[in-house]
Amino acid sequence: MMRAWILPILLVLCSSAVATGLIFKGSPGTAAALLVAFLALAGVNSPLIFPRSIGAQEAQRRSAADGRPVVFWRPGCKYCIRLRIRLGRKARQLYWVNIWRDPAAAAAVRAANDGNETVPTVVVAGRPHTNPNPEWVGEQLSPTV
Image 1 (cartoon, rainbow, N blue to C red):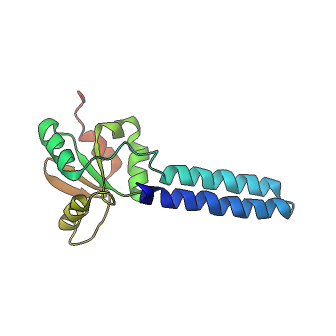
Image 2: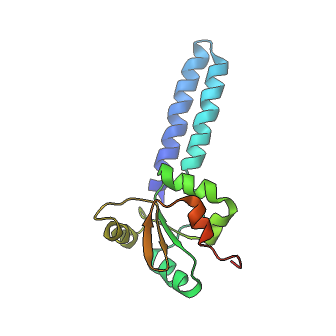
């Protein structure tokens, strides 16, 4: 769990230090803008933006039962963030699996991507799709879900 928070914490700490320095140099406006930008970046990279992750086996079992796609992701991945943001509320209908938390998930992603841990990898009906278009992923959700 802690590994997912490392990047957001570092962003907050570093931006706070730089903003403090800017305030002492007489640039409070620049400090405030920098701090807001980095706090937003920390929020986007935090586990708060993604629905709760489940294990790879559980996600595959649930997907087999109801047909919803499984998304393999990791914190800090800009393509995962893009997918999550562009899906909006539909993202909650997907099964999200953090490959940093689940070694079996990381192995599944490597198997689908020639040994690389390329995310997001979206599994739809048993077929993996690496970094798919967010609109396409949204289309894979049934309207009744």
